[in-house]
Image 1 (cartoon, rainbow, N blue to C red):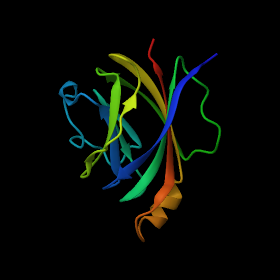
Image 2: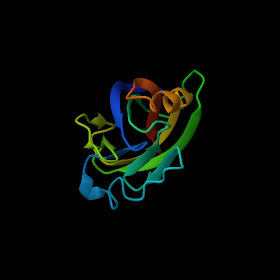
Image 3: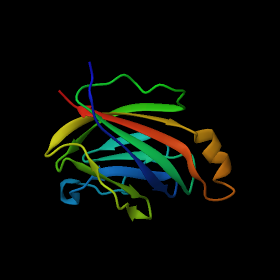
Image 4: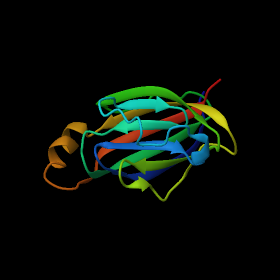
Length: 152
């Protein structure tokens, strides 16, 4: 049975319909975000980073990060997008970054050191944020849940 190690909520400043989770140690990321950002894919994995395409241009999304000891069950709920990927994280920590806004001030702790992590990301509120963000900056409409567990 999967055991939850940590769970934390974060605000994500989305701009130009994109954002990323990137290894906190930028020197371990061969191509820094936003270079190579693919605006069509919900989730694209690169070495040391995960890129996300949002349904809204400029807004604040909510992100719940769960760290598990093994693969958990998918989160309950109705999700508009679901994707899985793996990420090599040399520092054991991730930082969110916007396309133009750059790094956000908070840090996600996955572990005390390097590792390869699997992640399942689900998202809701995409249709709403696409409509609402065209009329102004909205907050918390688009919601992401990212579940991380060590790759075996």
